[in-house]
Image 1: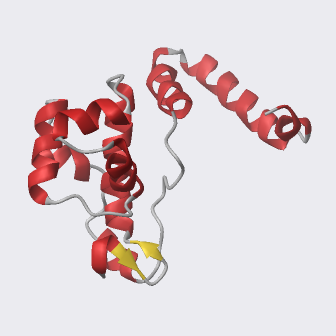
Image 2 (image 1 turned 45 degrees about the horizontal axis):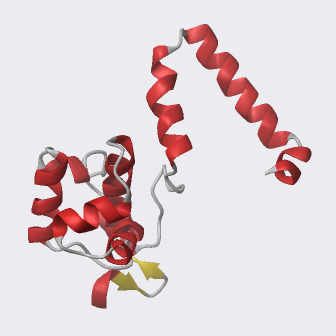
Length: 138
């Protein structure tokens, strides 16, 4: 499995760690070029890390954790103990969707709402997903 690629693409653990890097980078307000400059890499390499296409070496992950001021373990938080074995069987992770500034901001802001407003926001999002014109306007 060279560079994190399995038969069907990047290894799920590499994708998970890359996603955590992406989420943290966005939540701190950095772009890929900012992180790349701090690590002496191109933004293209950061893209590959975040997609899991290229595995992040232990030393680079350590550098990333120092830049973000988090423990290295942060990038593995939420990774189920059996995930590595499940990943080999082709099972995905529960939250396997692309991280964007909008999804991260929604996740950050939602807990600040009352429970009633959270339900209203959730109902609104579900309604927009069911609406055929939602795709036409994006």
